[in-house]
Image 1 (cartoon, rainbow, N blue to C red):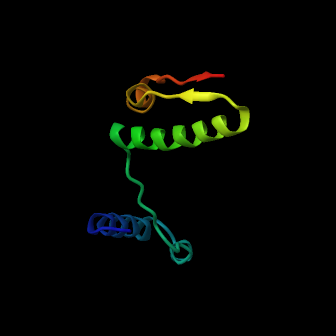
Image 2: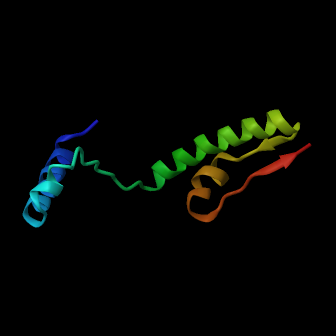
Length: 88
């Protein structure tokens, strides 16, 4: 969902493209997608989701039981590698 800030960015980009490109190229642009950077909080949230998926796969497929500490894997892991252990 695009916000007003994204719309302003898109307009500025298209203005620059129109000034520096030929009309044949400009007419071929269907859409501009604005990507925003993620901070550590977002990265940790994504890491938790991915670790949950991996834990489910590991626990179900191999008979191993995994343990992943909340702080160690997602919070600390987003910038330093974190920790994940597995036991039979």
